[in-house]
Amino acid sequence: MDACALCGGRDLEDLFSQTDFVYHTTDETFLHARCRGCGLMFIRKRPTPAAMGRYYPSSCIFYRPGKEVFSFLPACRELAERNQGDDLDLVARKR
Image (cartoon, rainbow, N blue to C red; front, side):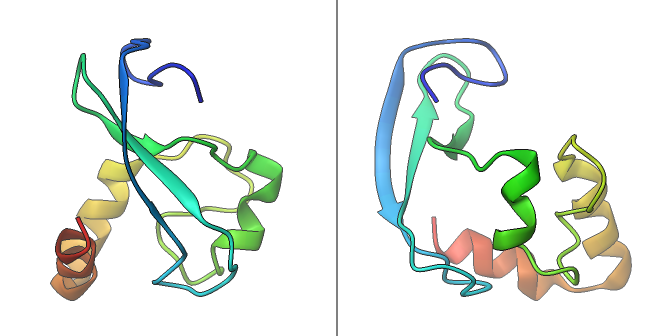
């Protein structure tokens, strides 16, 4: 990805590479970047919507098969309602 999906900025900072430490569905390495314009952090080479099922099990609340738009906030609300703060803590510890 050469531009930020949020603001369209092209001033990107590569941060780190990482494998799938949560679901262990692949040995691929993913390059994480940050937009210097708005601060959004994202994976540089995002999987296509058709490929998402290879990376996220059906139990994952962040992936909804059949929906092309990924929505982080509803997933965060669902985690809070289910009182599973450990999931969010895991993400925060890996930053």
